[in-house]
Image (cartoon, rainbow, N blue to C red; front, side):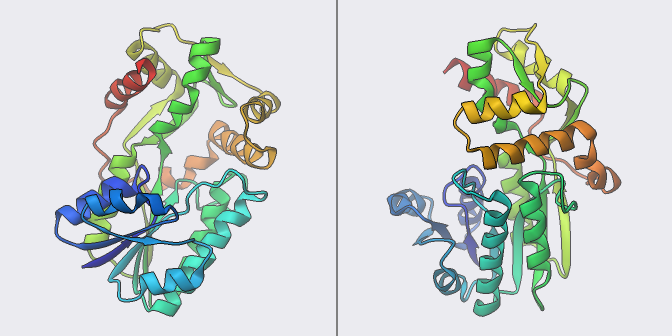
Length: 294
């Protein structure tokens, strides 16, 4: 099959490309960075260099493809984060319509069933609606959980302050996923058969925060690592102090409130998957420790 992969050589798109080229598919990887051409070709794929804001470029690249994997890359410089995500979804939809693509696997998020109150996930809600409005196009949305690797951003907090924390408590639930497991799920769907508009939850493990902190702390030699629940105001101040623009930081604070209240997981709890990803918390703890110590 001819498969288009967006996301350049990101945490999901790189292992996804490796799986697809390894099974003999003709893969084109879209990247905005011409410096990635060599690395993309080293994976056995073709590189298409251009901008996701360029619908003509997307249309040309999508034309002739059997299936496209879509995702919205982060852009912490966006002044309106929801609008940025929504606009990329509209660009994809326009190119899909113009190119004649009939099958799409789209990276979404747990919580995308909600139209407000989930921070950046609201943009992915918009993308789902936009792609679902395409006639005669089968769309499978991968509603991924909370990325394990997000905790890499907290390593400085541990080293400098001796804590882990966010604006939700130690009893909060987390539906965790590793990008490798998302890549495997995406590869299954891209190579499989689906019709209509549907979604699939992609989760590796379910844990509460206290278990997660205990496990990560033990892995790095800090078995008593405390979790601190910040106020929304302190959480916002911490993120902006670390360099995130207020417009972006505020969306992550809002996502934290959805974790705190549990609303983020409501549809997932009603529609739990029958199978889960391979990477459990203990597996990620070893990876976290290697990064922490490295």
